[in-house]
Amino acid sequence: MAGSERVAIVTGGASGIGAACARRLAEEGVRVVIADIDKKAGEALANDLGAAKNRALFVSCDVADKLSVANLMAETLSAFGQLDILINNAAILAKGDILSLELADFDKVIGVNLRGAFLVARACARQMTRQIEEDDTRGDDARRRYAIVNMSSINAVVSIADQLAYSTSKGALNQMTKSMALSLAPYGIRVNAIGPGSVNTDILKAVNEDKAAMEAVLSRTPLARIADPDEIASIAWFLACKESSYITGTCIYADGGRLALNYVMK
Ligand code: NAD
Image (cartoon, rainbow, N blue to C red; front, side, top):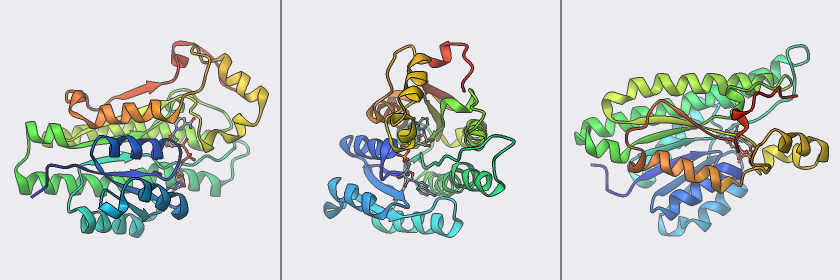
């Protein structure tokens, strides 16, 4: 029987947007499993969020690896006995367009951003449906409890030529979000995506260090600033909580107004 306190997995939860999501969920009383390849940062965050009091847990996990994902689920259930929320967030970049991108880099990005998102989502969806069937919690209880949030990107719909693999992975993730939402709606499990614009994290390091690149980003962002990770985490919490109980199968773009512009990205 699933307890009333909810349990979340946040992949890529050791830094950036994932860490902000883990913090926000913990503030909202959710017990959080941080799944990441970065053991040092992941353990430090889990300790900060109350690992000693069984409020948080770090699990070393490569989302692209099936056995690693199976272990993530086993460790989550062993520590907390249930799973109610997934923030499917881990992703990487690789520079390269259709002429220059190496197959190995294409495979790596698709492996983490799409295959990894699929492996984790499938493991979590199977666990959630199992709990719903065991507890008979379809309907109102399920609507309150279960949610999957896929971390997409504005690049799902606005392409960057030299981020071919990344843009492709995020476009596919949006389609996967809709397919998952259809399959899981009968259980009351909601599945949505978030499409951030530019957010101040390590993934944006190259842009942060290049004045011209940053000016280009700001020039195509009507709010004229990049986002703080907390501004994305608040949407993740909204999509995971009952305030969004009638929203499923969609993507919320948090892009400072960029999609309102008809702009060619370079
Ligand atoms: P980040 O690089 O700060 O964090 C990514 C985290 O994922 C890191 O902790 C990293 O260790 C982890 N990770 C990488 N490969 C992994 C793997 N194989 N298994 C498990 N964990 C792995 O990046 P971020 O900006 O916080 O990005 C988080 C999400 O937000 C990503 O899905 C990214 O595509 C999306 N996003 C970010 C921006 C932005 O501007 N920062 C914009 C749009 C979308």
